Length: 301
Image (spheres, rainbow, N blue to C red):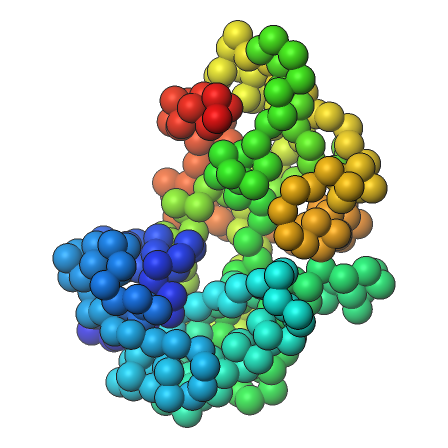
């Protein structure tokens, strides 16, 4: 069997990808963890993965993880509190790409991005960095498939929770207007990656635009209302400027620009193709129904 290495096993979507590969049983799975003793890394070890340490401070940090592997999955991360988050992410992506090239990795699947700054003149550093990494991988001749991950349903539990606006009333502060927004559950990324790695001949050199549903914000709100009654959810119809001013995390302008990019860009996501890759993917209504109690619990925090 081929050996697949997943870099960064403590994080998502990497942890879910490793679990999906292990459940499939068609690969020897190696996971590289910043802390091999962490609960998530140990969970993967118990499930049958080989757990190895790695770091991104230099080429030596990924040697052991990549040596002897045939295929690889990774994503890079944007640290908006870093003095130069764009360059830091690009440098780490280049480091991984060089390591994959050096060790003869036959197929690399990674979370990619699009050139937002180049196309529309405003920055979305997370996407811009990933796009630069993808360009570099093409330059050095790596066989690759990039995943374009849309809005994650789970973001309603964490980064973009509906805002209380009255008794049993909640507003969704996402500045998409009347433009539909693609979405997917985090749990469905792993099976898609597994399918791609099992069909490398079909996917090498391609981009995979993930999507399990495509809804306007008002439609997301109506679905939440249907399954979480008597609670009522509404699109706040928030502007980009209002979103940036009210966003409480790091990188508010970049996150706002992500939504603006999705509004302006003609998305090439093929939901039917995604269900061919993984027939068990969840439409948003299915996800809400399956996670009703978790959503209600998050609203009460």
